[in-house]
Amino acid sequence: MAKQQKLFAGAGILALAGLIAKILSAVYRVPFQNIVGNQGFYVFQQVYPIYGIGMVMALSGWPLFISKMVAEQPTQAEKRLVARRLFWLLAGISIAIFALIYFGASVIAAGMQDMRLVPEIKAVAWMFLLMPCLATSRGYTQGQFDMVPTALSQVIEQVVRVTVILGVAWFGMQHAWDVYRIGTWATFAATIAGVATALYLLRSLWDFNPLQRKTTISAENLNYRQLWQRLWREGGLLAVLAALLVFLQLIDSFTVKGFLVQGGLMSTVAESTKGVYDRGQPLVQLGMVVATGLGTSLLPTLHTHWQNKAEAALKQAFQMTVRMSLVFSALTTFGLIAIMPVVNMFLFSSREGDGALMWYVTIIIPATLITVLTSVLQSMNRTRGLVWFVGISLGTKYVGNVLLVPAWGIDGAGIATLIALLPLLTFAIWRIPRSLWHGMLTWQWWCHLGIVLGAMVITAVAVRWGGDWLFGQTRGASILTCGLAGLSGAVVAIYGVIHQHIFNQTELCALPKGEHLAQLSKGN
Image (cartoon, rainbow, N blue to C red; front, side, top):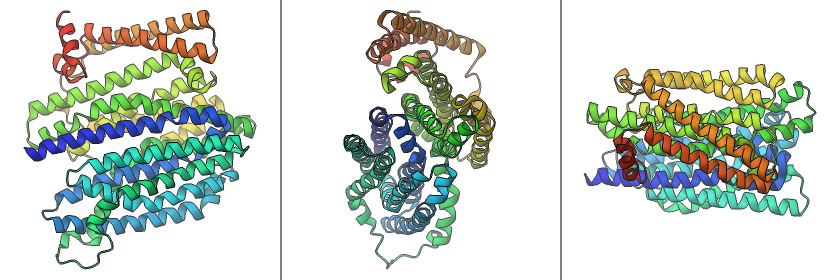
């Protein structure tokens, strides 16, 4: 019981740290874009997906697998042994990735149709050399149910990285650096942050000491060949699922600018337009924080019910998880669409690309559901076939860009991303046992949710139009209009959720201050 309480407490700490890290990772891009402009933002975002893939590997993909492997070992000596061996396997992978990116920088830049990106691509390669230290240290401590080192390391990494990026952007603009030089040093911030994080995790690393060569135990199931196979089969799936959106962004880095030029734009205009399109990424990240956080916070409970074969409790926990994720992601998505012009002006000082950003934020709904459902499938050991559908989604994204971007510009890129997520979402829904879905989302419930969303959108749009008419469309006016429209929409949404009985009493009580909401719901 004490061990289970420690696990849940640790999961809460990790979730809170992840929330802080995600907010920092999304928010800093707003002042960065304001400092360097659309073209500078384009330069940074072109290479960002490569960093994003490395971050996911070192933060969530590999550590989750390593923690599972460590937790499986019966003795402390075997825990240390498996951590040491996985460290060296990851070291080999990291060196190979570093070499591929660093020495292939010219090829990658040519694929992105911008050879000026070569120094920036080389700069991002260095962070991969830190991946074995970061991933293994985090996984080793998590495998012993100590989540604090991983949690604090996430926050340290993002604080250092964000501070360096914004400092470089300000210093570079003050000293008339070109945007490519700023982008190179801003990207190298990931390596600086990785070094700071590695220093913090040094104690955990020293505990299993990867430099120790002698071992007094004989564990046939922990030989390098078997660990390698499990690392790719299980750890690879976790890493790919966690990095799905980053892979989609990487496809955009290779295709969007070229297809915009093919559609008739000048190269510099295409770069600026791609920078406008990239504004959608922090909006999606922020939009997913609340919905994903609420949903995944229930996953430890769900996993426990699955292991104990408590079918009724499992079904209730699953339906609560999915319903919360769906409702909050839908409210966030439609709320952002309703006030997008003022959000765009408030955050990025222009209303360029409103339509494309509206399309782009629609991925919040499928991306949130994919995150939650694939986590559920992992807890049930029903992941077979997921990696193939990740490939199908990536292929769909590329084909969508080919067909839609030349004709529809960045609107087409946003639509292609939405379409690309649908095959994987459909498969994940299909893989969940039918019994868990039974009686969950009735037509009556969908109608009630539609009424809430419609009322919220109509209210927010009406207030936005009124704000534009009364206050004008300057950036300062947009801040006021955004606040009024967002607040009015949120009030209508909360009222609607309570009075249309979108959540049952148990689900309402699970929300912050949910007891008060449950009392209000009882009176209707």
